[in-house]
Image (tube, rainbow, N blue to C red; front, side):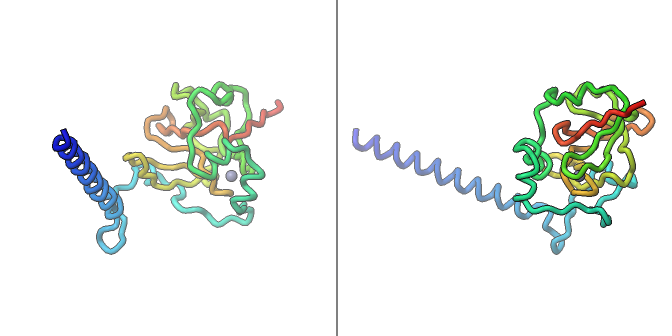
Length: 192
Ligand SMILES: [Zn+2]
């Protein structure tokens, strides 16, 4: 009896060591990924980043820069999680998904006009979707390799807040789909 318990202990320890070794290999792979060739990122760029949109945070006279503490005071916990921490809202939860009235969608962090209802369409994804921004320079794109995917992250050009992602499966005339979190948008109805 004592002998078999000892065997069991050896077996458990072997499994634990194997797991530790495996995770070390995994972590090593993560660290080395994209770091070959003297620190050059060799990962392929998302195709949407080659469409002429800004791919770096632009310098603007009206740039909004706040500390983390200031953002936390200004935003709700959910807005902070998405805008400042790269979060994603649960689909079909934003009341802005179904907005069809004419107007514009502004950044909750800095009030910059980002999108207009004219370019809004029903993508069926559960997130507010647009085929173009209000102005090309209202947003900028950054490569996002998280979750094993290659995506284009969409950011606000005034406060650099995370808005959502850009995909190439939208409708005419651009065939683009700006998939945006409604939580970080403020809708302003246009008075006719
Ligand atoms: Zn903003």
